[in-house]
Image 1 (tube, rainbow, N blue to C red):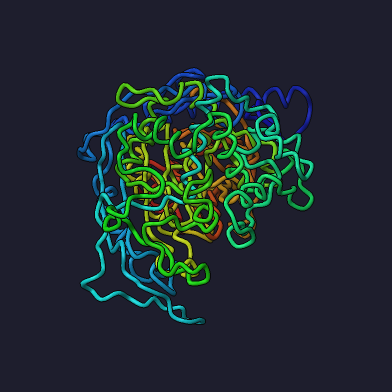
Image 2: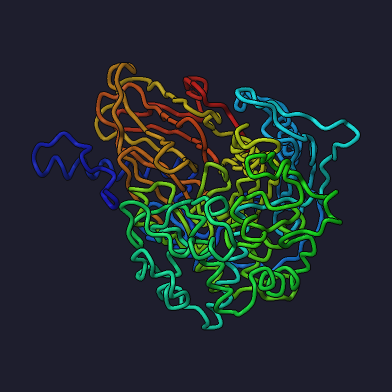
Length: 631
């Protein structure tokens, strides 16, 4: 419906002359509304960069169509080279009170919580947050080593070490990164691609002929990176095959998952990254751990990052899981993943250990466009290519499939309000995660030992979201005219409404004008603009037209997903007879974006003024789950 006029469908029919008259009156009213309401419509051209507020907290890159919902093209991102330093939140436009919440919220999950009631979410955590190259928070909470075993089912209670043998968490604690290791394998593969040693669109069998087993000859290297190769998610190589060589051979010979085909589905697969690890070793003629050290960690000065950490570092390493079934006891100082362990601690999918401080350098390198401290790890065009969603065509069937090259994109289930079409990151099974937001030049690292002592104690996604939400809220959304705007409360599994009762039923050619800022979890959290003609007993969506930043587009009354991180000026033709207007924000059971804000409602028609949200009608709003906010 993009591009339709404001007055489309807004008259009651009749002769051509009457329709022209109504259209003229509607245009006149639109002009009147724009004259009296502060406008977000005037804005930059497509491709222009826009500071989002007086603090300069975010830089919004407006890309995509001049007509249609906003999007972000990685090609339009600007990389600013920065070297990390420690500083204060206010230096980079962050609200200190939200940055201060990071420690409090990390500590809250050291004990059972309403959203994780049966056990603590983790024994300990390290959190690091940075913006514009400034580390604004680097905190350690809890214990790195607390338990020595796990009791029998069904309780599976943790058996604690004596207090004198427990080891507190510290900012430089070393963690088993689990699947974040995949990013190091990815970078090595892309470096080889830059040098012409690997073609991402070539079949894997060009480099690994034995990969053809199981009919996989058409699988490309890119499919391994985007998890669309059709391989199974996991096989217990560690317990099925007796030697490393047999385990590697089995991983490469594994046939497709049932019903899968090359590029036809999204299946997050450890086996695909095991194959990629073998591929880069074969092409480079060197082991993966040597490649990661010589091509990434050593040049970047990441001295605490690598595979198979020295026993001398054990006192700094966070313990993971009690694994008596593998004959390992409490795993501490060795890789947690059973397959990586059985492959000698070095594999494409797992095995890397690191600290929050080292990972901060890795994240900043990517934010810088592949360079850090004068050392180039990847070309800028390669980093941009990593942020393209190659799985967009699969989204309708696989909603969680958004993937760049090795990177996860736009994952609200752990990125929360830091997510965007180019927001990237990765998680690790042991409780680790990193989130990088190129639009605000911000990143968040959360390292936990959530599997200590037992993976069955549950996920730490609730904590990941809470901490990402803190950092996202530290970047304020300021109303255009100052003061406060209406903001939907942060609630999961809710329907939150903000209702404006009109002074009298709307007549013909009535226009509603308001400002809107929205950023929600796509598809799952939706905002509807609705009208009622029976005092609120029933509601129908109202078509809206949004203008700003070179865009002018129309929606059917429902909005979801990325809103450009900017204010929009919205106009809507109000159906004759309308008594109430409202915004209804519906959220699913978990995960949200940055939120929804509404401001400066004005309803005006030939019959006069029906509602003035900043004037005489300011106190007449009926808010259920909405609050006034200046941020």
